[in-house]
Image (cartoon, rainbow, N blue to C red):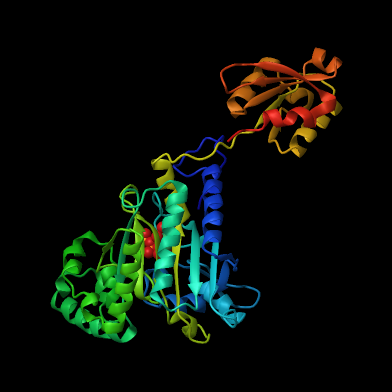
Length: 431
Ligand code: ATP
Ligand code: MG
């Protein structure tokens, strides 16, 4: 579990700064508004049964990754949410949210999984979660994939180069059952090559074997019967329609018949956005259709599709690629020599802020003041575009000095204290 710190704090681990975080959040808000998705928040703690029923008993998450506990006050069995979809569906059912028609929503926040921590894999991590509930057509599968693409573009990630799309179809439950029989037969013939976990899942959830990360089993998994070959006409048509929509907007993808995702609730379209630049933690975004989940969690049957995006992974990728982001530096750093009377300083700085400028004051009282020289150093290091200098002589004349710090000119000008609104605009960043 990590602290996300301001850029000025030295970091021991390779983690995104809080500035990266806000850069991402701003892009998310913009892009999701563009597609008509509404923000929603659900609790971080839910009944354990919600995840067991929702994600499936024989899944990595439910079998070994959940932070579950008993509420000592009343004996309730609770779990820190390992993913967002089940909680969102619970909320939709509880509030009969689809009564007036389908709904597009998104949320963002911490998820918890007891995994082995490594770069891009943490026990508390954050997800952006985007869901379109109540829509059955392939058009919305394509839309949800394009929301992610729009986000890449907003952030400066290049699709096909920095992130690539992989898609698959998991068909419908009846098709999956047939495939499941074929899978069991296949893996039974190769029992000796299965690891312990796969052997345990062979009869309970053989599809999960396809999701195994064990390198020793990859060849075996590669040659396993493909769900794609068991799809009926309707499933195939749905998949073809999604593909046609993606092709129409020039989005390149690879059909990966081994892509099955880690939860049991998926059907038809599943997809992942992957990168080669983060080692084995290469999936930044994954999702798909889950038409059975709403009914399974007690609601009126309704289709749905969505994705979860690992924010830390995405920001690691952004750092790796050094994607540009707007400067977080202030417009003005105020240099206040030791002994300067505070009232005129505060009045000017407040007026500048009211005019919309970002202003950092060198503060700390008599002990914190520091020499002019050290204050100038701080001003420079802050990245601010201008220094405001409250020198004794200028103050006596009713003025303050403004010095340009960033344009190389070092130009200085005096401005009247009485008339801040007049000259504040000249300090505004042009960015
Ligand atoms: P993986 O195969 O890497 O374990 P997953 O299939 O378990 O991922 P999902 O449940 O689909 O992941 O979650 C969506 C996204 O959340 C992932 O694609 C990834 O970017 C991110 N994510 C999942 N688990 C973690 C984790 N422990 N730490 C950081 N990010 C994570
Ligand atoms: Mg996982």
